[in-house]
Image (tube, rainbow, N blue to C red; front, side):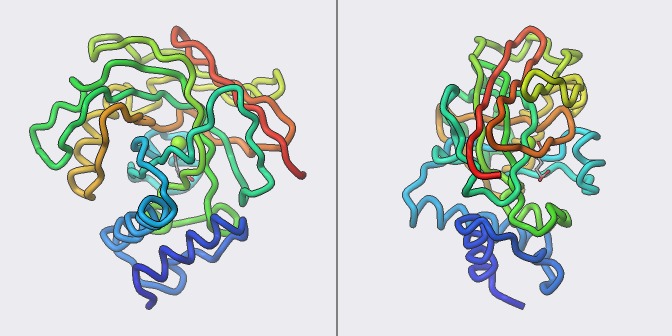
Length: 260
Ligand code: OOG
Ligand code: MG
């Protein structure tokens, strides 16, 4: 059994080289708590050693479509950094990725600093805006296959994200029941509804607070929370234009380039 540090380093190596590795759980007995320790060590490599800054948190597997696609049922949490944020309008170069996929999401802005270790934390009350988002996920494992513990260790496959326009929003704005579509080069490739995200995207706030408290995640002021995909993810190809449209919230676009 390798150490937490060695396993985190092998995932980070796969991310940097673009060469997928075997699932950690094939050779190592990893508990969920070990998996989050590996995730946190991977984040430490990216922040303390590589100078990235935490820009928010993300939930994964909050929709049935995603749970079924990946064969993993539990909701998971990961961390995103400023290096993962792709400003809308920038072209994402895919030549350094492993096997990226894209999925449509709802994002929340958490305006003020919150103490996620506090069981009484009012994360919902700290949200001041909502936006359509695209998440690029890129598993560091071969064939994009993993167990719950593998994907948690791999920071929930986090790779990149793009945010659309923020709409000011307090917790009372209805967000359930809105149609979501994902379009690649003007062709609709996936559709769903925001109700697919935990029945209501607002549920992402208490869910994040609970998972963050259990697994030791933090959120600086002004950070983003990605609530999870509403549809299955779609393989991202170079030289394409991807748009997520969320009814009433607007659209967000990502353009890609790179070698096929
Ligand atoms: C795990 C990450 C899932 C989501 O929105 O459900 C996720 C994966 O599918 O690789 O980000
Ligand atoms: Mg996602």
